[in-house]
Image (cartoon, rainbow, N blue to C red; front, side, top):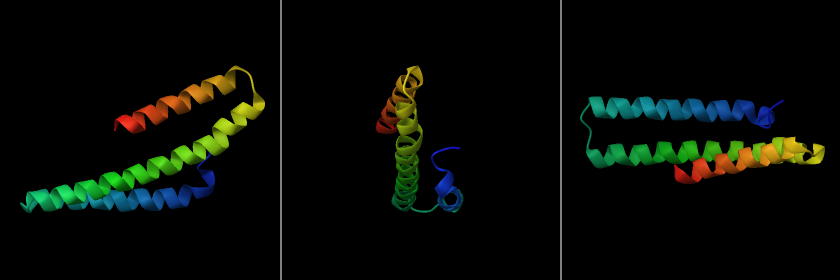
Length: 93
């Protein structure tokens, strides 16, 4: 079971809303909307994706990483390294 299992429906709703935002962005470009308006909507979609990412990361740390630490061994080290890599990717984006 993944750490996000309890909030899966919520994550899916948020991602579908973001999907709609991205489709709206495509329509804005097709309709030659003002550049700043498009950029504002891109910023909103980006923030929404970041919020989903942070929620998933939080759940991963609380569930998957904490369980691996409780189990101990090399699996714990691997999960911690994996979480660190994911955090680094989020920071770079």
